[in-house]
Amino acid sequence: MNQEPKNPEQDNPQSAETGRTPEADTLPTTPQIWVGSLSDYNNGVLHGQWIDATQDEDEVRQQITAMLSRSPTMAEFGDLAEEYGIFDYDNFYGLRIDEYDDITQVTKLARLIDEHGEAFAAWAEQVGRDTATSDDAGEKFLNSYMGCYRSKEDYVEGLLDDLGVVDELDKSVDPILRGYVNIDYSMLAQDLELGGDVTFVEANSGGWWAFIE
Image 1: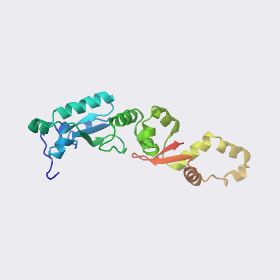
Image 2 (image 1 turned 45 degrees about the vertical axis):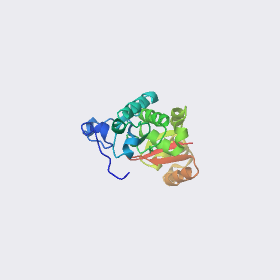
Image 3 (image 1 turned 60 degrees about the horizontal axis):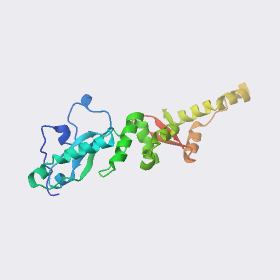
Image 4 (image 1 turned 30 degrees about the horizontal axis):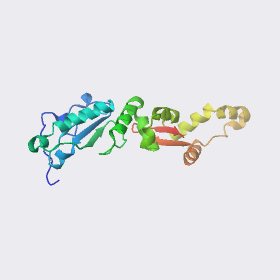
């Protein structure tokens, strides 16, 4: 393309631009995709709209079809606008959405993120797209997700506490020596991670997500 895409819809910034212009408190919080017409883009026109990706797949496809039917290039030259791409996206918590990603997968991911939040997006990045969009993806996520912790050491400390390890130390070690017997939570967290028993992912809001196999 040899020229900067024109914008024929300046009066409707949310359907005409991939950038967000309204005030932050009015923006949607659910996963959104900006879908644009490729034939228009290739002719120097930026034509598309933001779509709520948590909707049913058929509804999303209907909105895409309706957007393509309003193609300025098609209206001017008569060429059908049939191809589209995802030019931008929002509220996927860092999960990458590519231009030609399958709408079926994108809407599944959007609904699961809307249901489970940022943790699901982090898990999806680890397990891959096929697992994260499988029919039982929600169940797999819940079985894997252990929570968000201030540190990796906090997770290990909580794990050992749940297993009763600390209580066993209190019972089996002489009280005089107990203060000198400590667990290296940092080393244990490292060993668990290296061994593949747990995966830690740094959360955007701080702390660490913990996932088990």
